[in-house]
Amino acid sequence: MAESASHLVGRSVEREALASALASLREGGSGIVAIEGEPGIGKSRLLAHLEATADGCTVLAGRASEFEADVPYALWTEALDRHLADAGERRLSRLGLADPAALGMALPALTDLAGEPAGGDRHRTHRALRDLLERLAGARPLVLCLDDVHWADSASVEALSALIRRPASGRVLLAVAAREGQLPRALAGALSAALREDRLTRLVPAPLSPGEAAELVGDAATTIYPQTGGNPFYLEQLARAGDGAHAETAAAEDWSVPPPVAAALTSELAALTREARRLLDAAAVTGDPFEPALAT
Image (cartoon, rainbow, N blue to C red; front, side):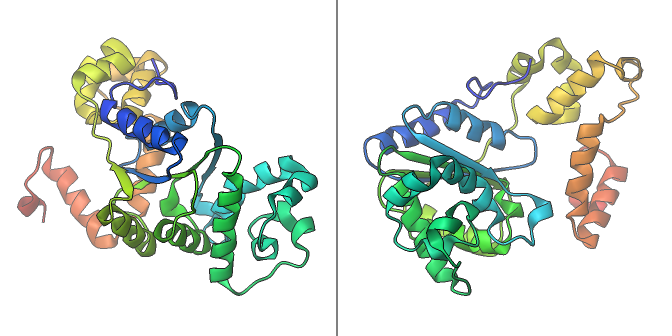
């Protein structure tokens, strides 16, 4: 049984934190939520849960892609442009944006309103983006969910870091998700500063317990839990493989890796340095658990 956005297995601490952030938002406050963790641990599901429970709010979302790392402001384009395009020119004009020309490169929906896009001054773009979020939050609280920000292009990272250091005023909740330890330096610094200043809620989802794993995938958890480490994505994929074409090999303890899991692991390994990969290879030969000194 897979988790839905509105019903998460376990995650009581995280759900309470998100509910608290939304309550503060509805009361007129603002906030920042950062969700960090390993691939498959449930970061995107927590963002989806936030979106699903943000009743009475305008909810916008975007996901960074490793294939758009060279496209300036790609994350912001995905998160905001469709909403602005759907609003139409008349409603956009009523927003009264202070400097739409500064957003022309990031948000094509503003082209008619902005005229000739202004380029070259990233600080001007950051101010204009902050102004846009404030105005979007004027009628209803705004929840902005940004996923996989560790893959964001440099322009998007700079704009996001600027917004975290100097948040939009008004009812704006900014929620970001990223792989732990893979944040760009500027973004990691901005989040750390916000945490020190008590302006940020940081969530680091832990692996599911054996009981929670059984709730997620049923009886299959008994045999596959040790291979998954309680990671929800791996649990679901291995349970699915055991129910389908891989049932016979799984029964024979062949432990064939389902393609989605193999793809996720390949992506993770590709991001490692040569030294880290050599150490991981040695650890695989040594066995689980292993002593770091022996693997070294």
